[in-house]
Length: 51
Image (tube, rainbow, N blue to C red; front, side):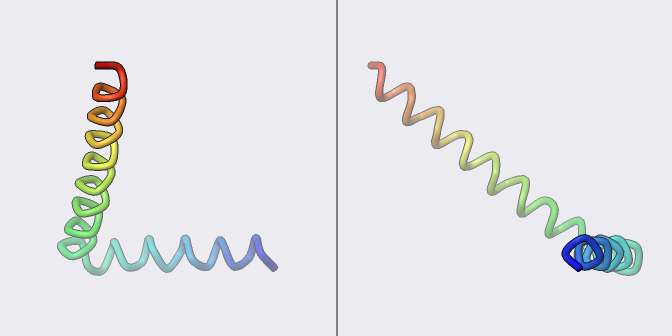
């Protein structure tokens, strides 16, 4: 059941990307910006930890 649900979610995501590429790109960019901010903050933390 869990595996089938995963496949269904994957198919729906692919369908959404295919039918709405603009908003999907905005979402992907937002996720990427968020991850970049997390890694930037981790870098600042480690730098401040060792200085």
